[in-house]
Amino acid sequence: MKNDLILDIKNLRVIYQTDLETVEAINGIDLKINKGKTLGLVGETGAGKTTTALSIMRLLPEKTGKILSGEIHFDRQELLKLSPLEMRKVRGNRIAMVFQDPMTSLNPVMTVREQIAEAIKLHNANLSNDEVDQRVETALSMVGILPSRKNEYPHQFSGGMKQRVVIAMALVCEPDLLIADEPTTALDVTIQAQVLMMIRELRDRIGTSMLMITHDLGIVAKICDDVAVMYAGQIVESGTVFDLFTGEKRHPYTQGLFDSIPSLNTRSNRLKPIQGLMPDPSNLPKGCCFAPRCQHCMDICINERPKQVIEGTHTLLCHLFADSSAAPAPQEGE
Amino acid sequence: MSQATVQTPDKIVFKKQSQAKEVWRRYKKNKGAVIGLVLFSFILILLAGANFIVPYSAATKGVFSQINQPPSSEHLFGTDSYGRDVFARVLYGGRTSLMVALLATASSCLIGSTLGAIAGYFGGRVDGVIMRSLDIFMSIPDILFTMAVVFALGANFQNLLIALTLAYFTNYVRLVRSQVLNLAEQDYVEAAKAGGSGSTRIILTHILPNAMGVIIVNTTLNVAKIILYESTLSFLGLGMPPPAPAWGLMLAEAREFMRAAPHLMFFPAVAIVVSASSINLIGDGLRDALDPKLKS
Figure 1 (cartoon, rainbow over the protein chains, first blue to last red):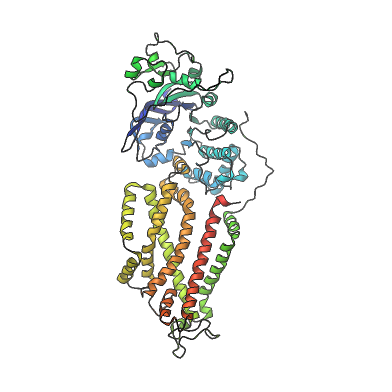
Figure 2: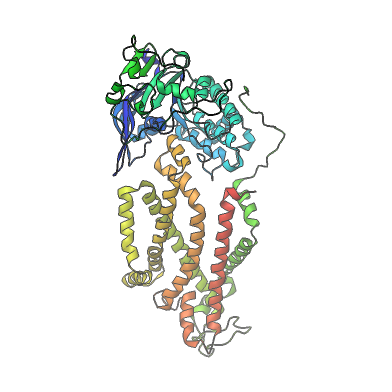
């Protein structure tokens, strides 16, 4: 069981510290990804999803970002203990990352071929130029781009094509773990579907594990095996996709996320958002972070941090389920 | 929808062109740049072939019976106050002046860009040390600073180069640093880090090429500036030691005879103006030709 884990994060705490304030970005999260599986990390803007990804890559802003405690095990290596040089060998080669905005994540003055070739050469110094070229062409056709376009510059490609190039760059070294940070957010819906399908297909072909960061539950349902819902730097609920979508118990925040998806079947004039805003991460509430917005808020929620409730593969961080026999399951959105 | 890859029509044939050809194709479109290149090549050929046109001795040894002669068929640009052939002096002086200008620009650009890139990229204490030392250099007026260096080391070609480099590299440090500060925040730099690139590689392949446009334009402007600056130094008697010819020195010497023999001033001045402006034109064209976004 243990050996099946590709990524195991334990009690990770990250803060951003400036002279003015300390932002508690991640407050003790645990994440596990099995080999070949995809974990979806869901949450609204500012929940700490990207910070989690940057912590794994050890690319937090040097001056402000600090990892206070925790362990990140990646395939029997403890990433937080690696030297910068060792970490560089992991980046791109064993863990690759796809960023949110393809428009800006390609270098405008380098041709697509040069950029993919760079990714290859960084980790395979002994390849000849012909071999590198060969692999560039393979990578491009893998993501559905005509290899004859390799000498073009990023601005000559459309947004969807650029994201394909970015994905080709990430996958060209066949990494063990791919971190996709909202890879389709900047694309329009039809292209989103194409790119998602392509990511899924390539993941299955290469056998890469994946951390899919998104705020879209639809994407989670489509391509993830497991899900973790993040709120204010904590994992409030995690489990298999099945646990989350059809499980009896649901964290009120997850419920809120589901409710805010506009439905085609029911007639309603307004969307149903979760009321309120995420708490200021430099000044988190004493009790449950979601309490101020929660419809099921109790006295204990305001004063005490909730403990994790574990039921098989499903874990919840909520007082509602603390005594699982007594707690009522939250009702479907009222 | 469920199809994973998009079929791209494979009938379209994309023109394959090498990078250099592509740059040249775009460079050619700019008429001014082409004129600049032609003029500058012409000047370079003239200067390189000076030995075949007039002997060096004509530029240094004068004939006393022929002082301040106006241009004639024998002396194309006339003669100066020592009876030396001005045409020969413009040619051989150009060698020194352009050489000093080009070399001083190249070295100040190299040193300045390197320091600026390091300061901007690493920031923090490194940045502090570099920028504060720079403040020391900049707190002394350029001309005073160069004078001090030349006085201390003595006036010759090599020391002139050192003095001009020291006077001009500060511009590049500040220019490149500001560019790097901005470019280092770009997503593709973050992406390159995530791909496992080291700092050196990121600076050299991702940051500096994106700052190239600004650096090139500044460099070509600088060549022209240094030609003029070298003239200023010569004018003050701190340039190349006589009788070796240099454009600035010729201007300085011609000052006394401005009324009697204006051609003494005219020809070296034209030489300076023409070479400086042709270099500027080239720089302008290069900047546009190297920017892939303008590719049509």
